[in-house]
Image (cartoon, rainbow, N blue to C red; front, side, top):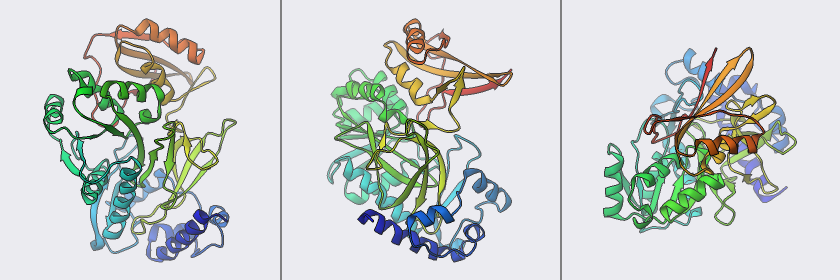
Length: 391
């Protein structure tokens, strides 16, 4: 057994022992308080799904029963963004929040950010976890933190020009949008972009565009409100995400012939609001070190099968960003007689080239409609470009 596995097994058993007062998991575990191996843990512990957590919160409002301690012990409130369903509330006690913060400190350290540098956060701090932990962990490490919520994009660019922060934290989409509005983003002094919320930071074409626009290194990161900060981009090989295995026991299930499967995560240190064998819905391809090659490839609930071809949002985004002249786009999915059809609407002069490129990559005709500038929605946080309808 590797040292990592020994450490994970000890943390798993500490977690199981702590859950005797957690009503949600007491019902699921059937009296299980310890295991002799990680294989036994995977065999004996059932999956946790977002659907059952949401149903539990509906039945036991507002917080559900997945609370190990009395309610008065919890001091942090967050809520999922609701991208793939009903938003869920999530609480943390002080120890659990410190664990979340420490995981984000690992992200900063792996990204090569040090005390004395400054980072700007150009978005409003809403109820979902987002960069709350990133902001607080940066301050804890001695990184000067610059909040930039409640401002227009032009005002944020002016702040970046005036204050010259070395690090910009945002979604890949918003990083491209800010760069497009700037006269010369590469002259603003940003040295690193830490991007999250979308898979773009691990997509070579999106990363290339961001790095070229800002003259800066792009480092991907992913996490979830209900899980916490999980990964950071490998600076030596930016095509993969490194997992913080000391904090998470990760599995990949239902792998296909390419090794792509669904990421399942157990949070080892968030005892107050734990998740055991949580089906994230994220599709990944782990390598021999259990780093995630290509980052988050897609989501199991986002994949669309069109005439036998699997389409993932990340794969489509990579094609779109490889075509010059496309400013913004959206994907329209129509269900007709149990069949899915896909078409794109896009702003810019590259629509003909985009349609040709989509056919080349996917061996499908995917119509592309050119729309006038500023027709399509712009996003600060997670983009919602894929839209479904039935006809």
